[in-house]
Amino acid sequence: MGDLGESARSVWSGRAAAYAESFAAVCAYPIGDLLDAVGAGPGVHLLDVGTGSGNVAAEACARGARVTAVDADPGMVQLTAKAVPSAEVGVAELPVLPFADDAFDVVTANFVLDHVGRPRCSLAELGRVARPGGRIAVTVWAVPGGAGRALLGRAIEAAGVRHDGHRPVLASEDDFPRTEQGLVGLMRDAGISDPSCRTITWDHHVSAEEWWHGAASGVGFIGHLVAAQTPETRAEIKRHFDLLSAEFIGPDGRLVLPHRALLAMGNAGA
Image 1 (cartoon, rainbow, N blue to C red):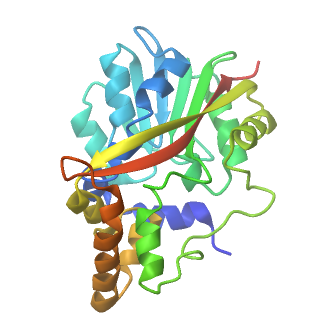
Image 2 (cartoon, one colour):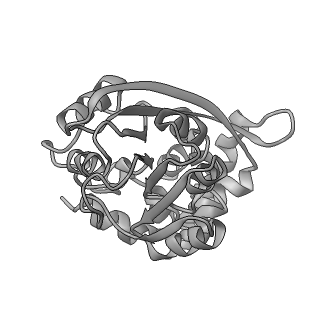
């Protein structure tokens, strides 16, 4: 069994620009709720962990917060530093962050726990760097997920490629159910007080070409799997993708892809 964190670093390395052009938009949907959950606003010192292309950092700065943003991938850090010049941006990786205890008022992590090998320890680290009582908010993809998020996986399966084992799985002692109750339990185990969680659903409107571009460019675990295939197999996956996409075409000819995620929040301990 491989290490999820190490595998995630390999998968995302060199993919920053392709991510920003494709899947970053769907990951941006919960940002408003995420920042509302921590009360991001003028004078609030916010740490955004796993900032990616900087969408959370940009919105937090627009609200007047003082923002520090970190990511494990140097390419993502470069994108964010350029896109959000008012933020302090650097390379850092869970479950160990290079900050003192109680360094920030609030902490956010948007779809980051999906990519770390030790989610409980990572949540505890978010609590360590937040001041006592400081708000912490995270998102993860729900299981079962929305039908739109399953589109690429269905195309891969229809092409005869196995993808259930394409990414490392967490050790049983580290894993948790991707449900509201499961995420609340993980936060409580990590020392986050008064945790709560709710499900967010939305339709992501995107052209079929843009959605395929993310996978064809090797973005994320599923894109990494697509990119690893022979040209013939990739063409077969694309053929099935085109066929299955017909289920999601909206009135304007773009795809309407249903998604589900979990938003959890709580307070750092004393």
